[in-house]
Image (cartoon, rainbow, N blue to C red; front, side, top):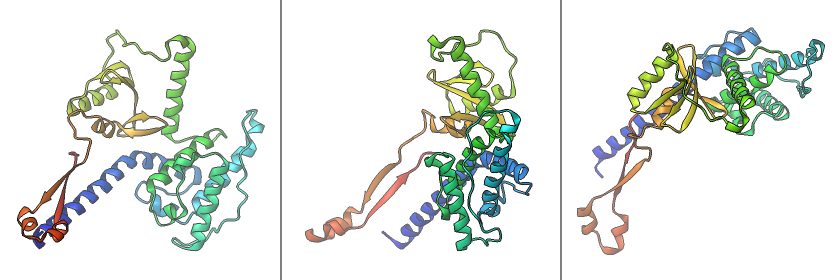
Length: 297
């Protein structure tokens, strides 16, 4: 392969890596914004989507969050509510820890140990360096969202996404209670309802990706006649409940686009002239380049 081709291949790989990072950041933005607002309110600190990881990286604020939840848990019985006791945060953390230091890692490790004690899902736990060196922003965000779900049980007002989860769970529970034999089978609302902002966004994205989406009722739809989804508006983001988490509706539909190439196709380009010119024992050492065709964004 010529030097020029190698440079082009390198530039292509760099562009793709940057696109992946940019897309990942876009997917996390709604969750980060929601958590930043929640943490600012609970911790009484200035936390935004832009400074989110910078404010948390020394582990001090997440340890303070654990202490606040502990205090809230102690007050729950006085309010007449019956909830499971919250595991104590019995660690002395380093309140003046500098970013990137051993003390920051120690803070993160204490917080993670406490997260395990309060039954935060293992699948969303990050490593100490994932927070301290900002290597795992996704895991940090998902972990804190799970912590926020726990906090809601002890009287701390949760993030908006957690409120929306409860709203959806209550809706499902009400349906099951009414008609348990139907197992959540849904019927389309035959009434002509006024289109809402959610409906308008769903219709726009349905047309954009060429995917059939039927309205069951406001906030509830069926994709391609088989996937039942719940859609909600969070600030200026259209969100869809996916399993136990959330995704933007646009990203969700882009992954289900029937016209989209889901697989990464690898084509082997062989320089046959070079191959034929090689002695037989060197034939396997000829230059082979890989061209990767990625799905459109």
